[in-house]
Image: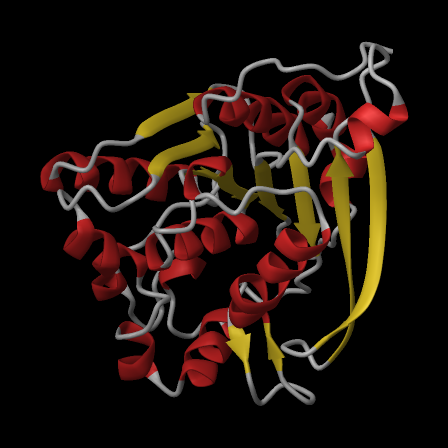
Length: 278
């Protein structure tokens, strides 16, 4: 595969940013002229990192390049700081990651790279914070993605949020939650925003508009597994079909995410389609 790091100034992030892009191999049976001038448009995976990560995480810690090579797949990996893939208009000079992905990164990739913008050729996945970003983009922009893989993350019922909750994810006093809610303009605004994925899914279940959804986690993941089971039961209650993938012995860790992203590529329906074996 070809691996590209692109540095550029972002309008929505108010400064320089970086992305990594995996591009398909030239098959050795083709001449450079045949391959590079073919005008072929490739399928693309938008792949999101977790908290404390950046655009290099998936490259350094998994075999995503090998998996993408087998599928002739373009993979786009942005840097998102610890933004939760949300807009932070009052941070520094403005750091609007939610708008950036949809309104800037996707047009950039479609305009500069041999990538298809058709819904059926676009997929999104991410781990932990990136999993929360994945499901947020998938349900708020279902027309853009054929399928989504949410790894080690699950929507939560915002009605369970309270002060002093034993789970940090549900605790209104948790520093990250407090900052996120304040950024949204207060609790009521947060509940009625694009962040309330649970409520959005409730409204959209049965409409046929949602992308195909995969949720995956390790069974020893103390951060996510119980929320995963709770949301799985809720999906049964509202009649939302999804794929569920969980493995014993795995925690919130890269060993699981490497397995899960390979599983996700198969879930997306991507067939082995070239790539040089060595």
